[in-house]
Length: 58
Image 1 (tube, rainbow, N blue to C red):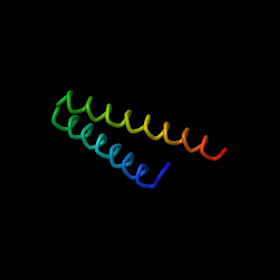
Image 2 (image 1 turned 135 degrees about the vertical axis):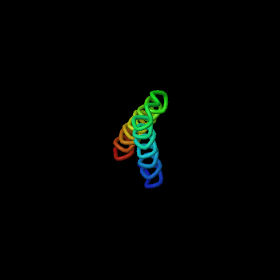
Image 3 (image 1 turned 90 degrees about the vertical axis):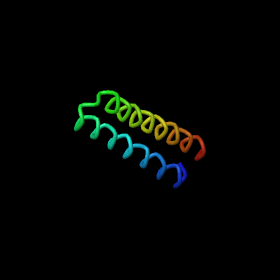
Image 4 (image 1 turned 45 degrees about the vertical axis):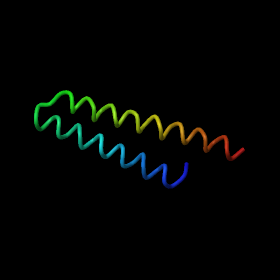
């Protein structure tokens, strides 16, 4: 996984966490759900990048 991909995925995850927290604080379930979705998407991207890295090493 490239460094810029790692940074972007980390930023996406932090952004999602921020949305989730803001949604919880304001009682906005839509924003909370969007934040959780952003975090899940980031996790999937990170997993995909790790799989690509495994195949690059061989």
